[in-house]
Image 1: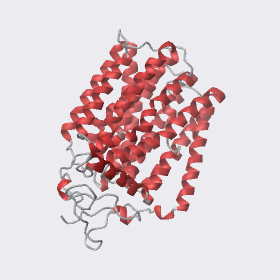
Image 2: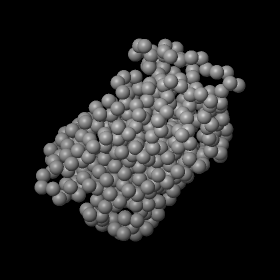
Image 3: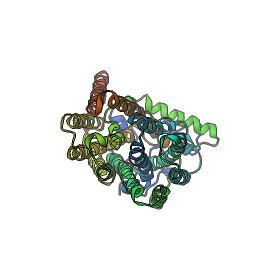
Image 4: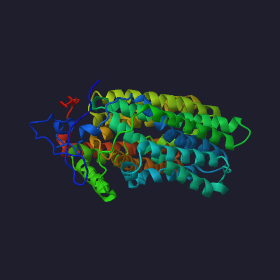
Length: 457
């Protein structure tokens, strides 16, 4: 078993840290080899966990995060669409759900500086399950949009706690060589849960006699995912000081060290760009009528099948990201997604093509989500892992949010093909910006995979 890092550093106000060895006394980290300067945060050997956990555990832990999203974008979107709401109204509701995810970095330091990651997971998971079950008690029509909006906001706030707890556990347990695979398993649970939750939710809503039963069944499933906490160790904090103010100061210093590095800055730029956003997948149920797709087809291809295909895409994408430059892999995945959107727009709008292209789109979306997670893990290091990952994740929701709004607007103005052309065009414009940034910082383009040799302990 490969040993984890054992580098040590001094940090004002944090007890138990000693001064680092000189550069000629310690092994160089991948961060330094890639030209990013000294690693943002170093960790004392006595605080690092030595028990390796297979990254597949992350799929189980993050699944409630995806289930909630799938329940919204598939089950509720389809029901609201057939209740007479316009696509633009449904797109607005979906966009609203991204608000907590856009600003979640503001409360992420709580997970890094108080309680344990597992405790925060349980708090968020229980709240998510309760609010999801309550959505089944609200009639799905235009007259109750305010109540639905409130529940969606609360549930999405709670599920951010589930996400940031899992992300911190992932960052502290994934080795340098398996960051891509860790990201793949993590996003397999996210996207797979979204597809399974949406597909099963829609099927249950149609088959069960009472509307509250579907949400309640999904809520129970989300609670069961907490069993994964028994399979992964709780890492000791490396940024907590004797006072809360000291801990928060250490969090800020950690973020600044990452943000000013080449690798960290490029990751920040990518978060704002609409490359591989996968926003159209949030509207597949709402636009199903444009391809004459039945309720069964929608439940199948955007539900269980779509979730499994996305999960497969995550695992493949994570594997690829461990074998090439991770940020370039992410850009390549974005090009593939734009090409799929264009192909769907120019081919006949039939139910068969709906099945084919939404499935291919789901596979590529799995690639992009795994790629995003891999380059964030690569850029951020450990330390205040929940805060840093959620800072990147929050920023990455901006393109998903504005692309969902753009897609809804384009559909209303130019029809379904116009929606897909708009998504592809804006995505390619983002890629042009990305290439321009790479020309300004050419040292970030290192086409080798950096492997870290564990230093002597």
